[in-house]
Image 1 (cartoon, rainbow, N blue to C red):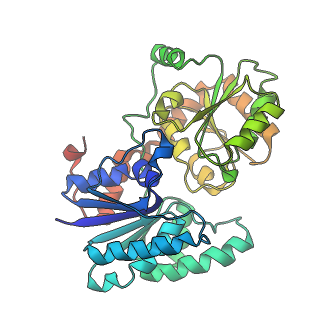
Image 2: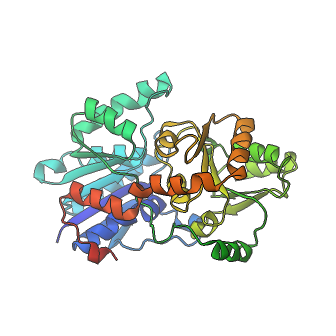
Image 3: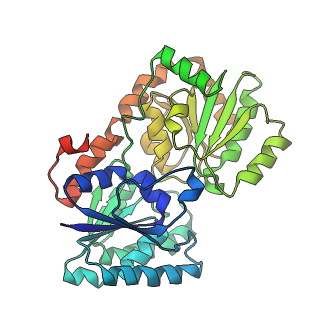
Amino acid sequence: MKTVLLVATVQSHIAQFHKPLMRLLKAHGWEIHVAARNNLAEKNGLTMEYPDRVFDVPFRRSPFDPRNLTAYRALRKILSEHRYDVVHCNTPVGGVLTRLAARRLRKSGTKVFYTAHGFHFYRGASKKNWLLYYPVEKLLARYTDKLITIAAEDYALAKAKFPCEVARIHGVGVDENRFHPLPGEAQAAQKAALGLSGTIVLCVGELLPNKNQKTAILAVKALAEKRPDVQLLLAGNGPERDALTQLIQAEGMERHVRLLGYCPQIERYTQVCDLLVSCSFREGLGLNVVEAMLCGKPVVASKNRGHRELVQDGVTGFLVNADDPAAFAERMETVLQSPDKYCAAAQSHAAPYTAAHVRSELAAIYGLREERDAWS
């Protein structure tokens, strides 16, 4: 039996974003271990479905947090006590510490994979980001057997610059059995069951400064002048919750904005919204955008490399500057005037990002045969 260790900063990352990979490996009889900090209590019931063993390792998001030294030692201990065929790491901190900890194991046959969910250096990024992160990633590529990218821009850069094998997959794979369009009557019934009415704008993501929900709130305030029934749903938890709550109150938007917290069944809201808005300054490849598009929903998103890859401006939605609430409001109104114009195109464009398609790509990376019957 082959064994894999999946590593990320937090366990929710593995539980949310690596189901297609874990299902694939289980179908081929692999044993799965996970090493990450246990944050599942913050995620309203999110659970680990597939791993055979889970190690609680105290990784921290900031690379400068001294507690990451403790996490590094814990990871070294795990690697010394178990024999893994593949160590597959994710997230910036998890990716750095794991590749350093596992670098000597490659001599005994362990393969080290790293999935880059979005480099911090990219076209248009600050010089500081290029000076800080690019040299680190280029160095760590020496200790990487396969670098897996999820964005076309990252793939092209890594392929040209890094001394390791580079592959690309279409995101982490969205479950097409959960995210799909609902017929009109079913959609109306689900909307009523969720206690929603009027025009629904959905914004999904952790409440962080980078996700920039502030722009979504201000954009909906402007949109409400034309559509008094509009309601913005903010789905996600995070450290910006109090600041966003204060902004909602200061702008008199309590009637128009609802904080949902973390939603394990976010597809119920995605299927009934009128459009999705995503205002992040930086994005690798927005899972929330793919989910909405698979549900046949148009998207108004900020201009960044991840959104540019997913949203066809004027076809599946629109792209605007992240710090321009007025432009967001204008494009949201354009979409809402004729939403059907964008729905079919959105769903079609998102098709390569389904879990089934990504499993096929991962099977090739792991050198596995496709066994679709085992995935159903």
